[in-house]
Image (tube, rainbow, N blue to C red; front, side, top):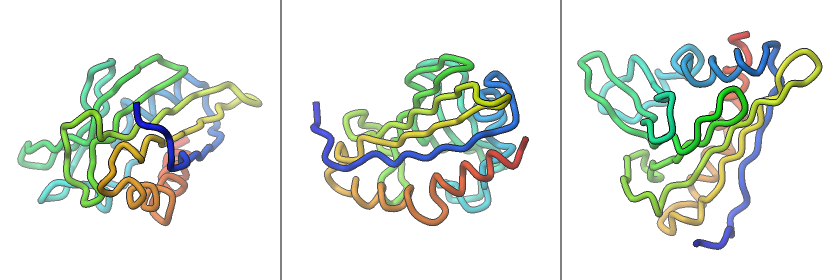
Length: 156
């Protein structure tokens, strides 16, 4: 196991919805809030992004012609409490199938004050010796997880 040498990127947002609804929008409704026009990896713009609802499911995009590009996999699927995804993208946003180089994203959904606290932790960047620090910098900066969770929260 690789020792954690790069700190996790952690972000949170509270949404005006039950944990069940918050989980559903994050997963089944991923395309409703994800900025496909700027956050896709295929040669052509994606029209949909998916998180398949099961451990072992794919996390991927599909363009208008049906071409698919994988981003990673669902490693844990525990509605409405927790979701774990593996991030198989290189710093150049190309898919790398090697699970030993994948970072991970954990999202938890906790009831709070009549809504839900959604906490995201993206970690394991050191697994990619050839660019983990660059990936961490990208997801923690402009257009990264802070803005993405704000977009997600606006759907409620």
